[in-house]
Image (cartoon, rainbow, N blue to C red; front, side, top):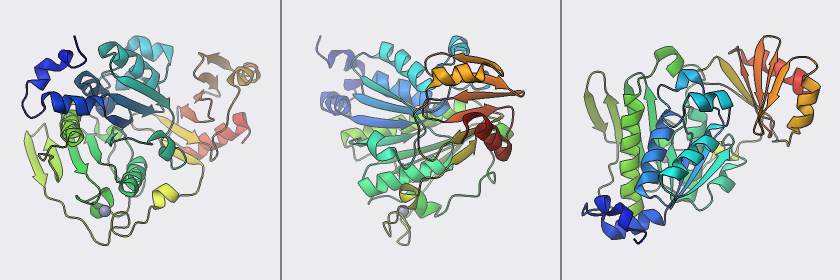
Length: 339
Ligand SMILES: [Zn+2]
């Protein structure tokens, strides 16, 4: 069998063909976030033979997210292995021809240029707008297409962004909305057919973009699966757009600061230090063991302290569960990590 034989049931589709398949195999795609949308799109892309997939995710599998994050199971949840690692292991078994590169990190202005270097396309599987504005800046500046996807309740949205050709995210929404002003999957819930469908649409457009098809669907697609309604609104480039109109990339150029984010679907806050550090988790474990229950699995350290649970990653990032109060979480973090 040649490399192409396994794809015969899709290369028989005339618009793809063997030539298209070769282009897919030669493509490099960055998937940002491997939750509900990311799980579904990763499986689809890997099985389709998109040759090189980088998966960036900062989180670990959680029980309340298993209903929609299809790559993870109850065992993974107990092991507390980061999602990017679990995803890469499982995906590698689905298609050994695909190079899968897991990155356990938060995508930030300081690391996006390095992580996304040389990619042909970026797929949005995130759950937060800050990261999407960062992706938009990077992609517009570097002329890389990206596909926005978002889901809430039984509703989903999708939009292809081709820099220089289509509207970008900031053409439509010049500034991100204030934190907390939008509904979240915590307040609205989410039913898993919505991310499955949006992921399917994202991957279909990804395939078309990667093989150079002229059938790429532009505009903002809105789907309400509960009401069974489907519409695409045409979008126009805005000449005053800060990103694609004026080449101002403030999310990419933003100064390093501490970040804290409430995590969607979890009673938790994530904190990231301004400068990533290299923590010695083994010695931190020994220190914290004197005051609470601590475990370390080689990837992350987990401790129960003062009724809160803290998960600490080697780069200094921490997820503090049991609160959504960012100030409280920050003082807790500073107390134990001395920052
Ligand atoms: Zn724009």
